[in-house]
Image (tube, rainbow, N blue to C red; front, top):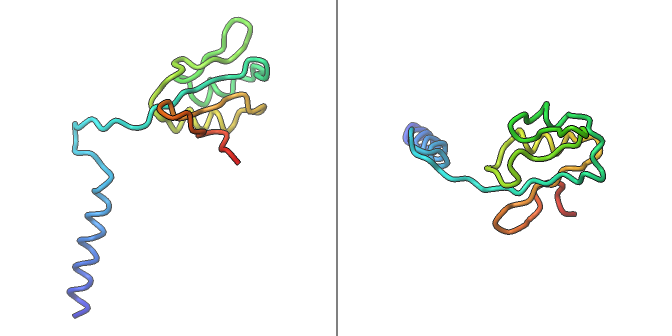
Length: 105
């Protein structure tokens, strides 16, 4: 009997692992984020641009700004926001305005 249970558990694990993925070549839209930099707080450290080079740029005044204020959810953009030394970056869900970072307390 335990041999059957092991087989069932393996099939269930395989099903769960594949449930969240897309088929190869199939586009699966994710959440969109609105990204903003408080330029009054930004100190121009450049950490955001180094962490997410496609997400942030520094202007001639060494102030950060998002390359695209609305973008696909991105681990790099989130890491840049989390590692900003002065917490000048906010990330919200574009559809609802719900905070992604910093989290609401």
